[in-house]
Length: 304
Image (cartoon, rainbow, N blue to C red; front, top):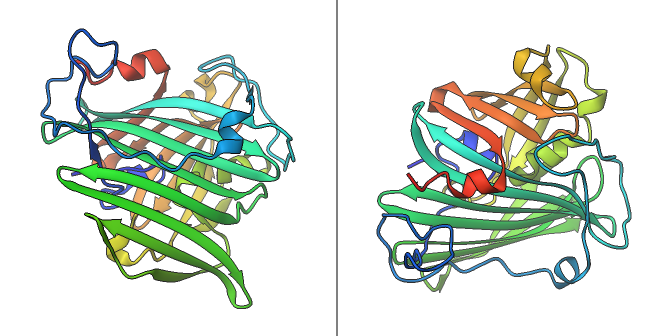
């Protein structure tokens, strides 16, 4: 089972954000999942805790998706109301033809902080499954992590993971509380090395530096994987390398970039727009392709 959280995490077959089984509505309903033929457990997934301030205030949007793409500034912006940097939809294909999942990711700035939210639906083992995440960081080029909330259900087991970062004399400490199947697990504490961000924020992190990178330049990082219970949430190291643009990069509206990502021994190619937002990703080792699309097409992706 390939699990996913974001374009960075989806690169890894073992990154697992878990999944939540949803009940498709009847054919008479208006839900886009109504025609899904998979099984159902008869209950919906628990959603991440909402952020009232971010949801109650009007959102100033960037350019429409998919194109044309206007480049938004990525320097810190202490906006009084949320500024939506991007709101994008993607599909994930395995083995060249297997339609595996689609997801939406949003990147918003407000009051000196950034918010990343992720919502995915995947076809897996006869189920239509859902996973959700909300993560916050400081609006700085290093995206200092603040906290995140993750919720998922898979078959009969519900998992809740809440991570909070504390600034201590020895550095940043990530405290993770996990509730699995109704039982609280022992609190996990992880010391974060410098240059660590939440793995879900890989594209936002890249957006702060893509314009200044030169071909052949490599930037290294550590990513805290939000649901990596098996490794006790220990950050993993990786690196982006800016490659020379190819036909795909040149085809991106407004111009784009091609990068190589090395993360936990898996190499993938990213094509991003001028903002740093993912346009396409290929991971040969996993035979996986992620492609940007429209909301309408994404929601029809698993209908066949």
